[in-house]
Length: 107
Length: 165
Image (cartoon, rainbow over all chains, first blue to last red; front, top):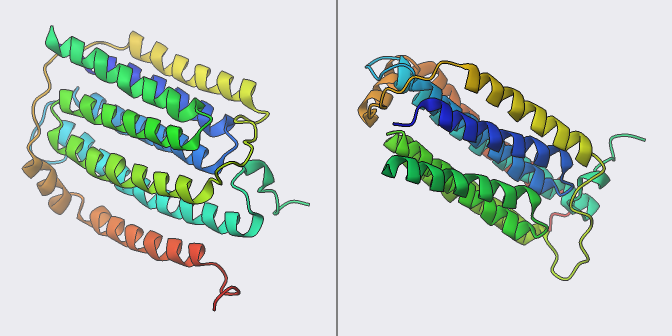
């Protein structure tokens, strides 16, 4: 039986990929995609580490981990909506989705 | 061992999808790579006996968020436009940061004690009871957050009203 740590290694690799993409990509939607990857890696970590404690009723162990993962997914959905709205708004005024051009706040 | 094989295949899907999502020049392909990665993670949830969470992951992440991103790509990308460079100037710093963070986490994980108890299935009933007993206030706050995100996104995306007809 595979322990929780094998899953945590996959989650750590996915998180590292997400960090690289969020820092290196220029397209705003690509950065958003990388952030989604990082959030999924964290959800995977919640589930796999909560396996160290057995499932019972009440806010303990696996139940708590999965409840937190559901919170994370809902917050990720809200974050995506707002970020895409911001990208659309910027695209309308600047006619580009490249993050290098989003520098109108500095002069 | 079928579980090990399934774990290997699913983590390969997850990481390959992540590489496509992060590295692809074509944004549409990147969005599809994200979808592949999210479905791979749903499979990893299923393998850990988190059936309810796997369903939520497929419905909301892979079904909702990824489709939203595909729509955004379809609206933002102009076909035939010469593509700019995919990566910015920060590539060495970004690669170093990603490698250091995941390397440190993996080093910590490999040091930790491995417990090999098989995961118990968590009935969806337990999760629902936790939400309505222990986490009632955060649960209601979450619905407020979703509502305000929806209204705020509409306000931001609609623009300032100058181009109203």
